[in-house]
Picture 1 (cartoon, one colour):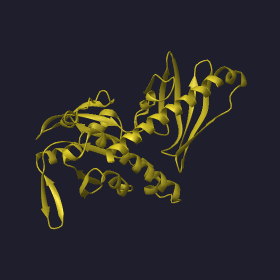
Picture 2 (cartoon, rainbow, N blue to C red):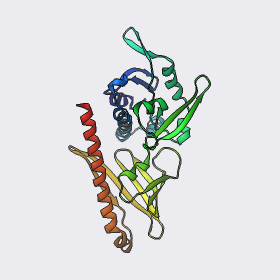
Picture 3 (cartoon, rainbow, N blue to C red):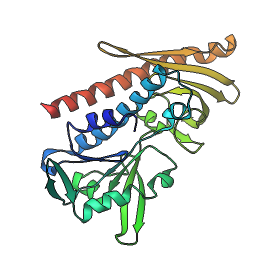
Picture 4 (cartoon, rainbow, N blue to C red):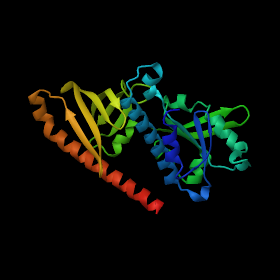
Length: 287
């Protein structure tokens, strides 16, 4: 699978790779060597590495065969379970065995993706959430129950790795985001962004993960299909964010321009503080 090496590279600092199983990587770690933040951060970091790798492949190839054209439709799933296992060493390799290892394989064939209508997600068992002392509802995870003939019912929590609702935490004036369309977040997605009593309809027109996103916005009584492109450019010290707005009627811009500019800058400042804090926590945990 394209991007598998990047996923393994992002996972291995925290987890030990047991083996590759087709297009899946099976990894583990003793519970005393990790903490909840390390687990959650590793999942998101591995997903970001995977999407970044697909972006780079897409940008560097001119091949129009079906396989290359469909690269960006690939996605990633994680299944995290805390329980007992036995390590069986065979020649120079090792294999994990036990009922809970079987459970992880069953989860990979479960219905969690259909439950949230997504193809990129992480599934955490109830035992995992309890062991990590994490409340999944606070993190916005979706509760679900898998059912297997041989294992019975297995309660899980599902993390949508493409969730646009995370913008509420940093984007000024946004009080909620409701996805209208089903499927993976990307070109064609429609979101309803709540700004207090006002609703801004967002249409994703073009999307290249970790590079840029172009959206068109409708707001009743003000404008329709206003285009906004947000570009990300890697720099030596971090990431440069550039936002370009399509020209709209001068009268409308006089009404919304000053407040919009202030809100955009305040949102970016808040996002930067959140990312700086997350980076500091991650650095402290690895010292």
